[in-house]
Image (cartoon, rainbow, N blue to C red):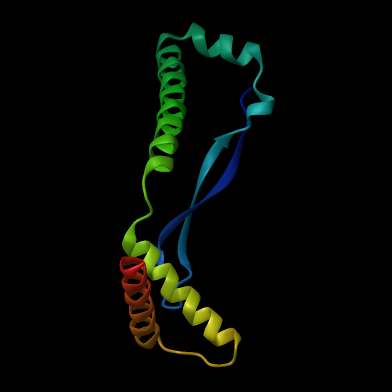
Length: 127
């Protein structure tokens, strides 16, 4: 007999005002893989409807794993998004200032980081 357990899924749905990730959750019934026996599989394969579904699910899972591996390889080759990199710089600057007891607003941090980046670019061009 195939056993199921209720499993929570956490999905990132954006960012909170403070810049931290915002999550939503949902639940589904996950098959307890360690409880599945060969007899369970053979029983499912005896009924044409469940056999077709089982085979389809197997290949779907197999294809998803293969696509995931290719996706990760492609993403490794991509340069970081300039917008994301800039946003991370701004957040890091804000965190550093706050940790030193001199917090700044996001608007102030954006202006300062922009100036710092422009200075770094002009130094690299003149060098």
